[in-house]
Amino acid sequence: MNKQGGSLSAEQMQTIESVLAGYVKDAGIRTVLLVDPDGHLVCQSGAMDTIDPVSFGALVSANFASTQQIAGQMGEKEFNAFYIQGKEKDLYVSAVEDKAILVSIFARGTTVGMVKIFAEKTVKEISANLVPGEGGDQKGLSVGGGFADSALAELDKVLGGI
Amino acid sequence: MATINYGYREINCKIVYYGPGMSGKTTNLETIHKKVPPTNRGKLTSLATKTDRTLFFDLLPLDLGTIKGFKVKFQLYTVPGQVYYNATRKLVLRGADGVVFVADSQKDRYDDNVESLENLRENLKEHGMDLDAMPFVIGWNKRDLPDVMSVEELNAKMNPRGVPNFEMEALTGRGVFEALRAVTRMVLEKLEKEGTR
Image (tube, rainbow over all chains, first blue to last red):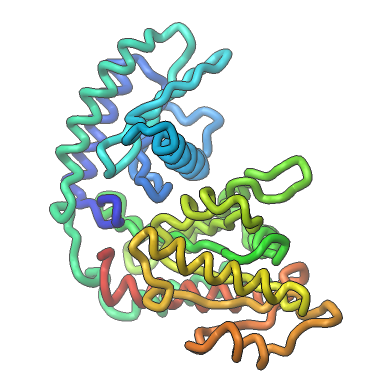
């Protein structure tokens, strides 16, 4: 997976899951999501509570992308992270280079500085596991022929009422 | 671009509905949202102004279920059509696997359609993408209204490549499914052939 799309192997996913689970525990945060720059959810850990991780990931990704445009207009090359304070929960979003976005949600009272320190460590660990081309990027899907036809048959069922 | 998560055995694709303001992009997603069983879709998220004009995007996640061992998921996005929202349109286009262009068939909207199509081409180019090389279909929307251009004329003027195109009435659903099906087929066939690069 990279900024141009791509793929992740089962081994990479296991490593990332383990890193995220460790981050939730060590930093004392409630929820963490890893989202790709196109808004697709890659991985999640911790409690989801009221969060729909798919739409939440897409919203944060869009939000992060817009902050990059703001950075550009301010003459900054990029913003690596931003923090939003709520009444009960806070949000900390940090870039995993240009490969992904780490989204951390934590309760008020959690030390923000600690979250940032652990997030930085987590970003480095994840970044090392998101090397383009090493996640099974390949020409064509290894799912056998007729994949598109099978998927379209499912789509027909799903949209049958239209 | 599409992502394949071999760990979760999951494929994610992104389709963007593009077109001039008030052409029916959001209505396409609302119609799909109404018709698709809740088990196959997520929430329809809309970032809109107080007057219900799209401010950033609408998002509808679709889940096609498990196909040949892979969970296949699509995210359908709209862009804000109004000219001055170009920065956000560009952001939403990032990573698109396919585009549905929703044109307004009314004669007095022709120039807006042309401008939006040209804008789409330019914005894709800024992302290093080429409209002529990606899954792309057109919906001629609002066919139920009076004073519309003929589909022949619209195709002659706006669709010289002859990409798949459909007469559409987004409010009733006419052409909505056909357009989505066509672009989905093109995305999946491209993915099958080229992988994620």
